[in-house]
Amino acid sequence: MRQDAFTEEARRYGIPNPKGVLLVGIQGTGKSLSAKTIAHEWRLPLLRLDVGRLFGGIVGESENRIRQMIQLAEAISPCVLWMDEIDKAFGNINSGVDGDSGTSRRVFGTLITWMQEKTSPVFMVATANNVQILPAELLRKGRFDEIFFLNLPTEKERHDIFKVHIHKIRPSRLREFDLQKLAKNSENFSGAEIQQVIIDGMHRAFGSLIDGNRRDFNTEDILAAVSETVPLAAIAKEQITILKRWAAEAGARTASIDTLLIEELKVYSQQQGLGPLEVD
Image (cartoon, rainbow, N blue to C red):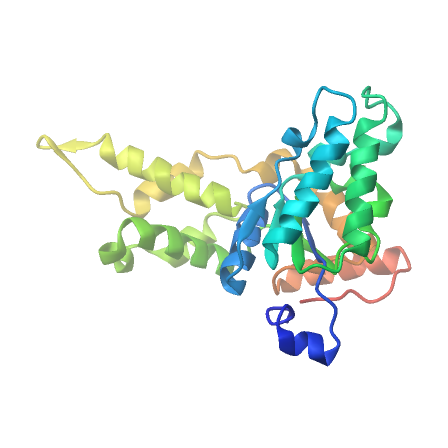
């Protein structure tokens, strides 16, 4: 919807420049990849903000670096500014135990003020895993256009993820793989875990010699890797439940049409007396 929002036609129409999106969800569900995809789809340069390099040891250096970053992003605009794992940079910043004499809070204050007031065509894409520790002022309307919740892929989405990765490796053999069976047997696997079990399946086949020759990997090799893998969803089940409840309470939009997830979030919303859930 916002692909043409940076054009001269949009400005004549009266549409302000989009501010950005916050992508929240489980590790390995494609949040960082989404930032790259947005820049690619919109044909805009992608800038990655390394928050760790913002902080310097000299008094006032960190505040100066954040201002330089803002000037650089605005000079290159229109562009997409990708800030990965923002929760690791500014989580629990209001707790008062950062130990840096308030430098982190000053840098954060400069950043969110710019996010609120900026008129330059810089589209920020921030990602977060542990959104509960983020300060509330970052999440309010005006900093981002929208907050999206990325859940574990559905069976259909897992089918497509397997298809993409296998096609990249063996495009001529794609039809030989039972993608439906792979998708069905990889319930609760993230996109990153699906990619890894394909690699594990390749190692399994590569290590099997037949008459001194390496054999190519197949569906059974990947299924064997799946059976030996414990997905993060099984390990961090409680954390995922908390994330889903937060998504319902915050009114976050789902990043895919997942009927079961939508119904689950609606139940959470009703339990909390919240308004209707928005879906994109």
